[in-house]
Image 1 (cartoon, rainbow, N blue to C red):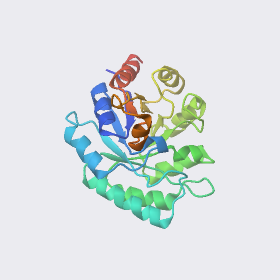
Image 2 (image 1 turned 30 degrees about the vertical axis):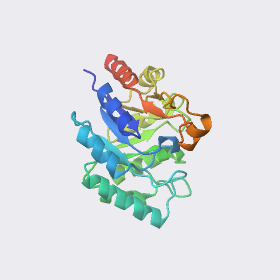
Image 3 (image 1 turned 90 degrees about the vertical axis):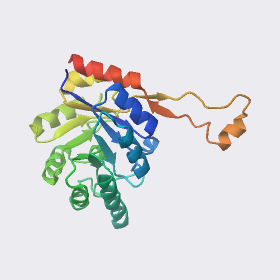
Image 4 (image 1 turned 120 degrees about the vertical axis):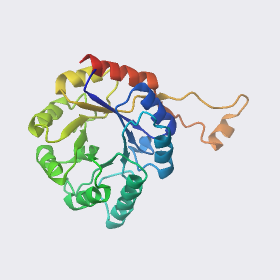
Length: 249
């Protein structure tokens, strides 16, 4: 049995159940993956945990808006409350990242989330890829008490960022987990494994959901119900295939 971990990022109940059934080691629960992932609703976490009979760990994203990772005092107050609420409702971990305008890790605000989430483990998300000095900022994140960093190696996807990812893993010396993410698919996973040697991997493994447009329904009627927006959901089969690829290594 492979000791490698597959974290699947999901933003709906349907995707969460598909990821669990496919054999995911852990979920990152969000809302609005089309926006890069935002804080999930309490109701979504409760429903996922109620049906999570395999007790797959569920980490919750804490991000109150899309856009950059430089937050105001008011935004931080929102996210501290969200972290406390989701912790009390059964989240197994928290995913968060904040930066200063100069591209350094925002130590003060990150520390506030660490306190709000205590004693849950934390992942510093892909805000890390906007750091100007990744090897230095990794040390800051370790000192803050985070358990892992999600990164594409400061590239558009993890496949292109394998060089920096491997360098960070070597520098970390197991003091923190470096988890490749962004563009991790069943097609790219083996390459990323071979070129980083990472212990954990992150992806959404999603595919388009078949249209729910009713027979005889006009395009205008579909638009009024937002049915023309293509929905993506996690594929149980793709997750299972990724788990199989990891087990071969």
